[in-house]
Image: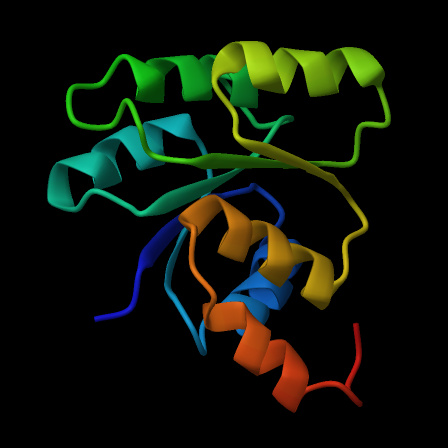
Length: 136
């Protein structure tokens, strides 16, 4: 069974791209906001949450804090993806309980390496080696 990643981002085009990068190795569940994430947690606990900072309703920091206070979800790794270039957002992601922080635009290899690191796995190494001549 593939590890499960919940991806919370309100940009459908971005979700489509990231989904295509991750789907060969992971079970990716696209979600639009924090309410959808909290609802999805009732059905299945993810192995990782990818979370945008700027979302309709509650922002990424608030959603991460809510995730951390949800029984059974306290240790789920969170990777923040954001278009923000603000150093305060990086510090905020750590304070909210995030384990990683990437700034958009991102490349496929960069995302796969960050996911691999947060999951403590080496599944991406083979995928990157097989794709050495492909796009980033």
